[in-house]
Length: 269
Picture 1 (cartoon, rainbow, N blue to C red):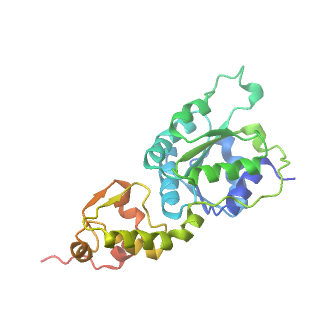
Picture 2 (picture 1 turned 90 degrees about the vertical axis):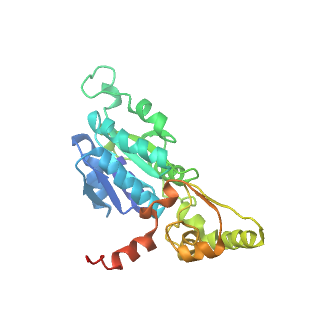
Picture 3 (picture 1 turned 30 degrees about the horizontal axis):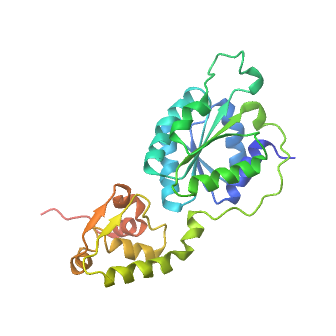
């Protein structure tokens, strides 16, 4: 029978997670090892906050929440900086930290912190493994992180529970995520274009969550209204624009990043 750590890792793999970022300590190694055995690639970072930032970017680009495990105590508090950044940038993220076993919480003082209380102000929800079916809990966490508005979700995993056998039910069909919801993007874009063409004085407002999600049609539509790309098309359209920070991030535009890699470096005169 699989352990709670193995159920978490296998559920993440079924949900499309490919990479896990972190700086592990002894109490979270069980989960990291389970992720490796489930086919997830663990990428070691120099700091827990760096792991959260890397997971955030993966979540923003792919639409699948990025995953960053950390140990308890200072490892978890280091992770808070990156998780807070994901909260402000509306990035889908699942942060998992180890925790002291429940039986030791009343008496143990070393690295004992109320982690759910610390993460609560900067996450959409804080959860703990063992509160119901673990597989369902991970599916719920991934769905919530990707649902509008996207953001981080925190999961606490006590070190004794991680190695305990888990009676998880068979995996259910996950709810639609940001990646699957984009199947209706072309139809929506046609409606937007029609309204813009019919308007006498149109204006385009690009918000934080307007990203291409790797769909070529939406890339072409959005790039045509960006001030730094397709300048000729924008001048021709003459649409006033208001942009927000994340909508103008080059990292969120795979096609422009690929183009920039193929472009030749400027020659010195």
